View: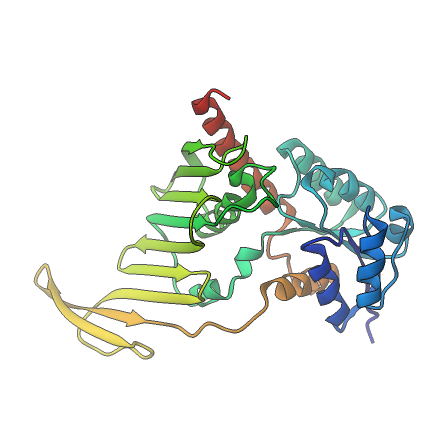
Length: 329
């Protein structure tokens, strides 16, 4: 019988406490304990989940096989580097680091130590995206909106690195082609940082992605639209709705289609097929952490590895810098 993976959670604030909860319930995980710079918070969370609160980060690192790093981004590189040097696999919440250079250093170190780096781009596991695995996705145009009301938490970093980076990662996974051009603009409204941003990314294969992120919207919006030859897909991440529109030759019915509509194009009989695939009821964070544990055991590849996290960060920083240049900040 394979032994359980010994895991520790570093940082148990707003998001970290959920890591603790899930690791407590994953059957092949032995949650060794937690660490937080706030000892009162650490003690409280440890009592709630019947695990140990460590007063020393280094003592926790010594006792585990892998860690989940859920700290402010400025601390990611220092903590992850120490863990990797000690031979511990690391799950790092997004963004992977503050700079591309820091990410490159961690990736190279992990490669030399044969260590797994996984990055917490949780939207890759949004249940509404899962049905797309059943379709041949080759976008010509992608449009993404991620809008949210203003909240103090997270407002210390630009909206590009807070919200848009999720969609950058999704777009890069949908369009596996080199980027040829990035155009971006943004404004500051509520903070001294960029609160609304728009980016247009052009790819070598001719595809284009348009991304808009805002943290000063009235309502929350998280939508993805994919346009390609004979296929149009809309995804609403918030309500868990995926809709597929396909154009096909002939008049034959399509299994799973909710509705079909005939049309004639260029003298040929074609039909529009509408499908609304069922969305699995899953917990994206739980799936993400289970994948990390299986990656540590060598049973699966990380859904978002260190290089993917680094590439999303690189594009996010380039978008942010172009906005700052435009604003003369």
